[in-house]
Length: 288
Image 1 (cartoon, one colour):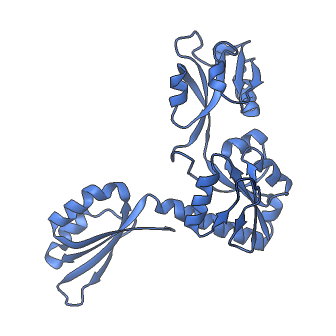
Image 2 (image 1 turned 90 degrees about the vertical axis):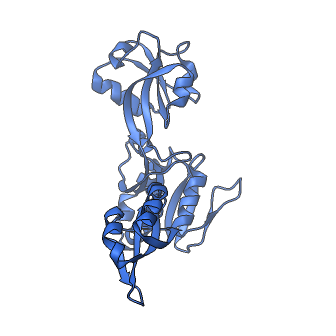
Image 3 (image 1 turned 30 degrees about the horizontal axis):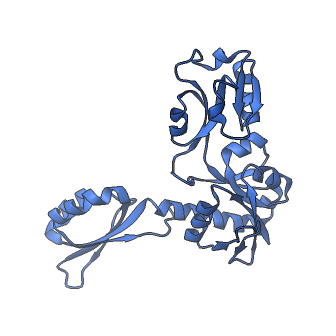
């Protein structure tokens, strides 16, 4: 039995969705913290993402999914198995930034000497200012951090994906403190157990494969031999395309994997170059 911690809250549903694409189905009632999963070797628990690194380090949980910012905040001594770039809203990394009023006098970290900064990321923020040699008072924020400037504090260290909330509160980003993506982390002792390590590595492989497939599609097409050279010049691919002779030897069948964003321009170009019977199909997993 391997114990996994899944982040409760904003990442919960997107994490369950990713696992489903990878082959594992989790289900949980609205008031429960113990999801069921269709794998007899897994035991799951829902925890706040901020708590997961600490419990994984302690060995209460074998492995879990959390943000890199949470690992840094706890200074947790864990194994980072892999990076999983996904979120509740976008595929952009979550950034912790130093921000202050757009039209104010504070333009950089050094301008905050002797002043107050609010944040939910206390330890990382303190280390940031210590490294810069700036003496500030770092105060813990229980949320809605951006509204505390300028009446309560002089600046904030806040997490953002798009920066839109900061802009809405007339805050300017002065510095980028930490870039955080979702990570799969493991307890060091659990990682040293061959059976557990293999199980966790298998899960990591399938999660990454499911994420990779989200940006790709497959294309199949038939091409007469006289048009093959021109079609091949157009085709992008992860590797060389797969080419097989048709049964009547009149041409070839080609199969490739491409970035889904390129398909809208690629298919018309392929048609004009002589390809026919073009079929686009979704992918569920891609493993390099």
